Length: 123
Image (cartoon, rainbow, N blue to C red; front, side, top):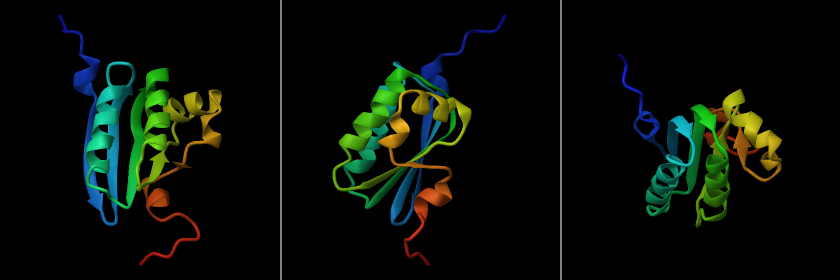
């Protein structure tokens, strides 16, 4: 018989330094159990004062209201970093759109688009 999986164990955040940005890729469900872990990961990176922080939700399978609240909080408490959120899949965009947050969150379709937004010089 299979043991039930613990959602908090399936959840993880991977960090990649892509100067001048830090990219945090979130895996699993973002719900009331894991949203604080996401916020803690973001706070840890923001303590280093990176110029840009990209939160990549492409690998998120479920985004609950607690996860949406965490995204709003992260956006408001980002200190001096420019925050960019990658969300394109149904699991993330549907709840964002249903709540109207696409108008207030800095959303991008891919990590590359978030790292190099239109109108920016990069080389």
